[in-house]
Length: 363
Image 1: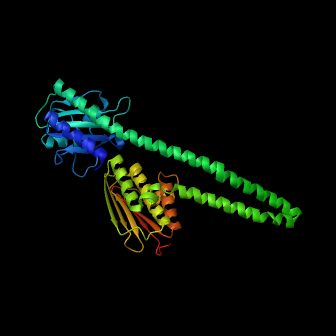
Image 2 (image 1 turned 90 degrees about the vertical axis):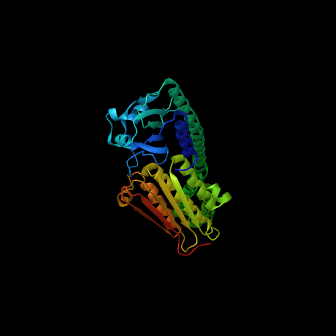
Image 3 (image 1 turned 30 degrees about the horizontal axis):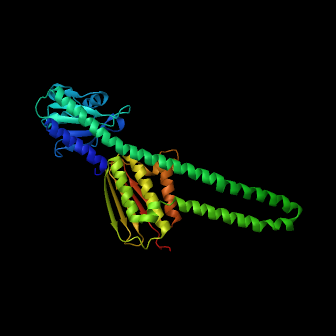
């Protein structure tokens, strides 16, 4: 897991290791079903969880999460441990200390856990050091969180502006066309020739509304694509996703974007953005791979994660399922440009999404 947030968590783990002279230092966050996910650890080769397990069950971490001060266990071997916690003892660790990474007046976001190979009673001076370190880590994390919230507010405001523009522009213009059509139908019964003179006006109004709709759609295209190009925009999008969601990302881009029409670039960007949204909401993935091959005809993009997967057919067929509308929207985008969208997924084996461009590259 690379990026800004990972750097903060890893720095906190390393600082704790150096300050308190422990043998291992790890940072966990609370995942689904009240389990804990390892996010950073020093040394990296230290046993943090059973091999192949993405999350662990830990009553000790939960107690640390619920305490407002340092929580310690002098000797793990003397405690009743979960099967996951027992792996710490099997690896030779005995002393344990943990502290919640908890912003003021907010829910804790994680636990900093320290392990020693010998029984350990934390003295008050070391406890204060650990508390100060937790405050520093939370302060750094809050700064990034605030930046993310500012971005969310900006998006919300933009949506409100768009809704107002549609209401005041498109909606009112369409209402005028509907009214004129009704008047045309009334006149046609009494004076067909006079009513026929309304048709050019109806056509002109409809064309103006269509032009207005196209202008709105043009404004919705990501500005980064227009100003920075598709490839730079994709790299920025994936990098931001990895940093914010603590997911290790890998991007491989082949070929040049010059031969790809603007409409297809937009589809690529929007499908990738929706894919990342689904990974964030549903997959619990720790790794993500994006491959965009523009050197072949047709071009293709694959988005693969190592998350928990899902039943693609079941979700697609049931509109009430969470995420089904996103899948439908991505498929519609692909079909409208003449391409295809394929999704392969199995539970506990991740998901692979493949977007394939049209056989004929339009202008």
